Length: 305
Image (cartoon, rainbow, N blue to C red; front, side):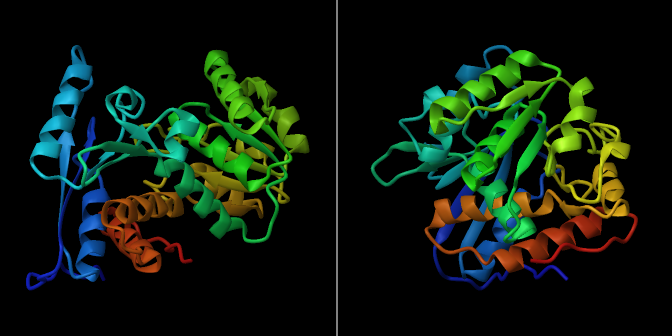
């Protein structure tokens, strides 16, 4: 049961928002407001639609300036503005500088705008929860876009022995490989989807960082018959939580890690950046489970930490 916001809170006031395209259905506002309520805050979180079309850079700059003038504490940034927002900011935190993309902007007391990337830290925490003491080993990462870049850096920081970047767009995977080498001195191999049968023969784990599995991109990013029980399988998609890939992996006896944990940790990290308070991650995961369950016509098992 999702707890309701308390109307009698008299603590700090926090104003935050989410800028992006198609952000109306996002669960992020409710997650933040519920967590703020637990901390006794008057926490208001609003979605701000941003189409990202012609003249979008000027519109994005205007939205940032207006949010700062209106007293926002911070903003989350999503598609299609995670990279285009970078040159508009005064500073970048380590995670954002690492991958050249921002999903969290905080407005400091001295008027500066500082960008962070909680996609990186969110996936790193998620994979730590899911794998525990299990080593990553050799990982096949399917998708080298924005989510894939965050996942790749997180995997390298967790100590993968080798990493195969699989993408139909070789330029994307080349850009990501260069970023990994520049930042970490790590050399990743690049491959296209037709190489997956050979790659998975020697892989320990596989991560889906493509949209495949989402409601508007149904299916799996690759033939799930290639999975073996020794594989661990992670998916960044969390709506639905039980993607085609993860259901098939579970049926084949694989250890699975859903995208729900990444979504929660992203939000928790952003909450901590905006407020300076420690997020209750167990409760935030419970909230997210309940929100997902409420919008689903079919009951499912929830994820627990």
